Length: 115
Image (cartoon, rainbow, N blue to C red):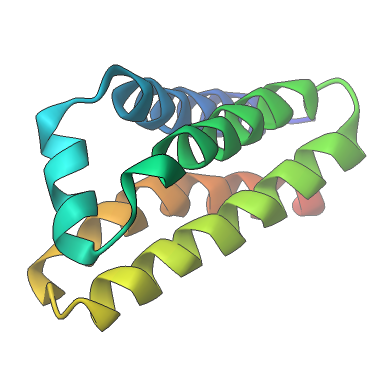
């Protein structure tokens, strides 16, 4: 396991964890766009839980690699769904936001496979 892999994985987990906490806290800059995209308010708990589980899985993956791979794949699918949701809502200027969260996850997966 390389130092770069550990650093990028911890960064990815921190970003996704921050995103989960923001959903749970009901931060206006997170909740308002969800409403604008047509996401039901009852989904917020599930969305935050998925992000939190993914962040925890990335960290656990440093010790048990297949958990990290599963978490990484799950997060890539999650944020792909987020991009599709933003595109369907026609908020094209918001597309970069999910990409900021998924990019380090993808790099983490790539570094893990390269090791």
